[in-house]
Length: 143
Image (tube, rainbow, N blue to C red; front, side, top):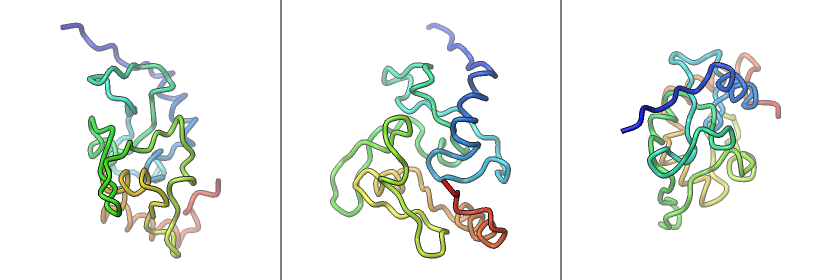
């Protein structure tokens, strides 16, 4: 068994900067996280994914843990198995939107809805954090 190479600090910083220091799935800002953010392999290593920057996303602990090795999930509306959101190949706003008070992510597509469910993007702690950030005028992200 070959030893996995650790992702360098410079690559980690590049991925974080590219993500504007937000989780590329739930959009939570890193500076308000209670657990460290991490490099997420969009296509998991076990499935042939590599450490190329085009396969790396910046993710909060919650989204990364929920995604783990998933690449597909069921759309709760249609029951179809679909590919999860790919931050390097897809635009967030094409698949997701905010509810009227910007505390809950809403899926606009099969991919969006399946990703929300699979990654538990609207878990209680994240929704509560968004409520506070809205009151502080720090959410939703302006871009």
